[in-house]
Amino acid sequence: MKSGRTGRCAVGTEVLSSRENRWLKEFRVALRGGLAAADGAVGVEGVRLVEEALTSGCKVEAVLFSESGERYRERLAPLVSRTDVGFPVLRTTDRLFEGIADTEHPQGVAALVVPRKVEIADVLAKPEGACAPLIVVLAGVQDPGNVGTILRTAAAFGATGVVTAATGQSGTASPFAPKAMRASAGAALHLPILTGMALGILLTQLKLNGIRTVASCAHEEEAGAMAPWEVQWCEPVALLVGNEGAGLPEDVVHAADGRIHIPMATRVESLNAGAAAAVVLYEAYRQRRKAMGSG
Amino acid sequence: MKSGRTGRCAVGTEVLSSRENRWLKEFRVALRGGLAAADGAVGVEGVRLVEEALTSGCKVEAVLFSESGERYRERLAPLVSRTDVGFPVLRTTDRLFEGIADTEHPQGVAALVVPRKVEIADVLAKPEGACAPLIVVLAGVQDPGNVGTILRTAAAFGATGVVTAATGQSGTASPFAPKAMRASAGAALHLPILTGMALGILLTQLKLNGIRTVASCAHEEEAGAMAPWEVQWCEPVALLVGNEGAGLPEDVVHAADGRIHIPMATRVESLNAGAAAAVVLYEAYRQRRKAMGSG
Image 1 (cartoon, each protein chain N blue to C red):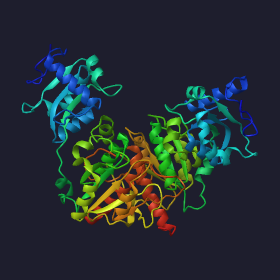
Image 2 (cartoon, rainbow over the protein chains, first blue to last red; image 1 turned 30 degrees about the horizontal axis):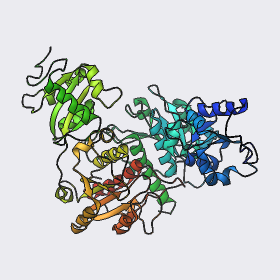
Image 3 (cartoon, helix red, strand yellow; image 1 turned 180 degrees about the vertical axis):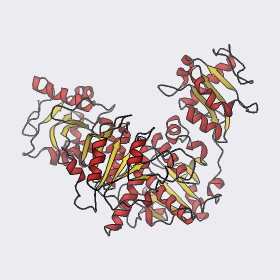
């Protein structure tokens, strides 16, 4: 037994007690994309995502190392071995870790983390350090990989908030599901994300707060659709991104203040969802950076 | 037996003869990503990709429908039912089709297609309808999904040619592998792609032909790296894209005529490979379109 390594809650190399089994069960449910625990904790796996969780400012509930995951202990030591960390650092066997992990070749490090609670006011507010809100609204983006990629891109290009919403046709994958979390490279824990908002209420709130809505039209030239470079991105803007196949519902496209279409050289039907979002958010960032005087 | 539907080589609902078994075997090898046949044919699956293959101008060797794939027969009829098509249109059972398909829920339509033969001169030449060559060089991009996404983006934003090359550290996934083909949405059959070029020879050829090389540096600010908007994209340019994790080899980065880095708002380590390529190629297209007077 090597218990007590962290001076707090480390447990032995075999997890046997009922308290320890409870932790393993929680990790298993969270890592495999079941419902979040009652307190909303989600699971992250792998040294980079655990690192993101520990530096995100979100509440960490527990960190778990397997035997072979111990090789990352040194890298994570400054974040988990302080005497004031308020969470247990647990150990288990490689065999038990493989039984709870979602990946095929787990690195042997995982954490349970509670994403920050976000209110609509947080998303609508003028953010510090940016000229105006730049909100990404995912309305019916079904693939968790696409959701994660868009979050990663949104964080990279200075989006100030993200909202996920269902449309009549389709829901949006959870940003905190394991696949989305991996694709986001941890951005899901850093961005303010409001999940499961009713789209109608959101659109009303945006209008009331003077935030212009721009509907992304990937599949065809909508009448009067602008190129990304024709949009005034320094104003308060919400970019609406729809389903991978069907796009945004027609009524949402027409209710939006503007429509955006990425001009293309060829007859290729569309860019994939991640590439299209990257292009639009890059253009927004290019303009905003220039306006802030650093471009 | 419903043979003779196309008036040529359609076979019955059961495939039994040795000639037919040979076809099924070829489809199986091609669709599951084995080596291309001796004549270089590759497999594509699903109605959209088969449509792309049939309209690409590439040589089609055979088209195969399963029983349930027959529902796409009408949509594809103008492309497969002409009396002058020079390839057999085959039929098989759903059970046999599932046995050769690479996807979990196959649509029941597949084709064997020979990608166009591309010489280096084709890639280096000044293309029609563009101000100058815009060449994308994939040097060590390992994930077939990333290769396909970049091809799709390259086609969308008017790249005039693509070259794949190995580096000392890693190879580049085949653009014609099933996963790459799907991610490219068929762009792999439309773009001129030169595969498996030796990177050193390519760089020399680019220099001799007055084509400026720009190395994509995803992971850190290289000394003197330009933002995408600082590059003169209307000149003849080759964009070098490296491995997802390691980037381009250091000597390649330093030998390039320019280095490019996408500025970002936050400490997120990097964009994913597909998003980064989309951003850079969009910027190239934006400039080129403007220069051609249509932006």
